[in-house]
Amino acid sequence: MIALTSVASERLAELTRLEGIYRNIPFEAIIKQDVLRMGLAFEDASLDGEFKAKDYFIFTFDHVPLADQKDTIRFKVPEEIRVRGGQFGLLPTIISVRINPGSPYVVRATETGPHLFLGSADLGSLDFPPIPSWYGRKTASGKLPGEVAPVIEWGYLIYITAFRNCQYFGKDEECAFCDINHNYRQQKHEGRPYTGVKSPEEIVEVLSWINETEAGDSARAYTITGGSVTSQLRGLSEVDFYLQYANAIESKFPKRWIGKIVTQAWEKSEIQKFKDAGIQIYHPNYEVWDAELFKKICPGKERYIGRDQWIRRILDSAEIMGPANVIPNFVGGVELSKPWGFKTIDEAVASTSEGLDFFMKHGIAPRFTTWCPEPFTTLTTMQEQESPPLEYFCKILTAWKETHERYSLPVPPGYGEPGPGKAVFSVSAFMDVIGYKGR
Ligand code: SF4
Image (cartoon, rainbow, N blue to C red; front, top):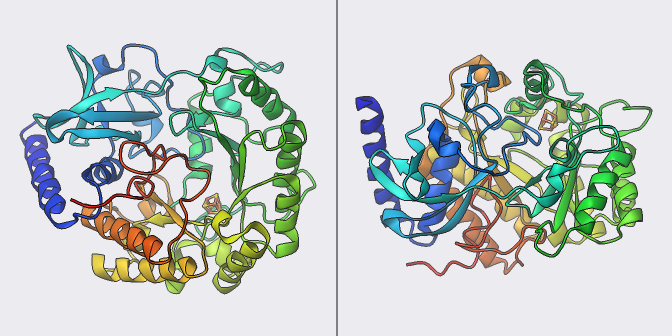
């Protein structure tokens, strides 16, 4: 308790210090990044009530294995929290939940409902996401919609992990930060229904319920995603495998939602197939910008496609989709991981900012997720990892915002409203900083 209190006071001091330096990004974004990098602990009593629980939509994004989580916590925590008010007067800020029983950020029950605490500092009252009206139904095959097509981002995004494994397998191929295969194994080990390859029919079945819901339900976009296919999956190449889901959805519900797809970087002729199917946003995620780190951290992608070809294909795909509709992801902070990563924040930010400038000058705005050193990944099994320092995230958010403004790029489509108090993207604060005027 004493140690935790001292960690909490250090965090408060660090938040205050960084708030004074990084005046062009909202304080909400700084706190959000700190909660994402450190994870959340929950008091059992804070979890009373009805809310949408964490669906484990693709990765665990937890700091501890499922098996090590208390029964009162495992599968009981909310998908996200929305914090507001508190001693800093926070605007409503949506943050993805990453379980870490040792985190100084603790969700506690109070007389007025759950609050977020950092030591004794009350950071604000919490809402947990509502359960969508259609979550009570089951598919004809007996599956729950939260398994087939869960929603995240406070209901904005329907997340369809069509293939819950990746054919990059083992430390010589899997991306070193990625726990997709380990997550699958953990979910099965805990006895959770968790479909490895989903059928287009069951996805369309769930989407038909969402389509019927009233305007109060907030889903505006869907993402088709999953692991890479290096040979074939059910007789199909990677592009054709994921294309079947796009075709099934868009032929039934043309342009009903903003359709997004995550695959590896492919040639224009393949991307044209996605576009023709009705997909509007393409995510060829490059994960880490530095060429040497890409080789080390994404060994499968390097061997099968190669970093130079990957980058070239990102640019080429803009000719098909339009530059604003190509949104490649990088894993924020993984460039500081051990043993291969940069040794200083400034080197890491310089490298990643070079990538941001490269893409944004072509009209392509990358987004980022916040690296979580999940157990069982190549990186965490090689050596103990620390979450990247908060100052890294302050600098990369500042660089992202400045570059985005310098090239006068539009708000990335498919992410809802931008800005503090409005952003729903929950795994980094890149949407929270857009349009912020400074203080
Ligand atoms: S390509 Fe890499 S990041 Fe994507 S699922 Fe496979 S291992 Fe994970």
